[in-house]
Length: 104
Image (cartoon, rainbow, N blue to C red; front, top):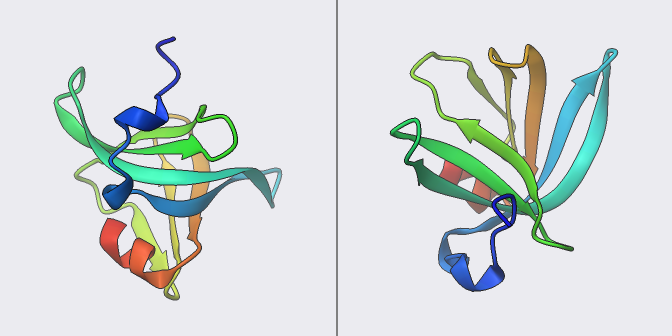
């Protein structure tokens, strides 16, 4: 299936545990917990963030990293931004600060 990524294909050394949240009607809505990677996205020829659910490896988030300065780091474990393609505020809450620093 195109929307799935097998665990065998994941570079476990490059993944980090993270919770994905979206702003819905002024409140943060939890969209699941998974592992984040930075991947080269062939279609857009850019790098992007991919989050795969820890339960079933489904894609929780695919986000092309843009050149615009839309990203904010909050404290040691949260990265948030307003995604211009879907006009939605998103946040990644990392289990460990090292994972946040790696992605930042």
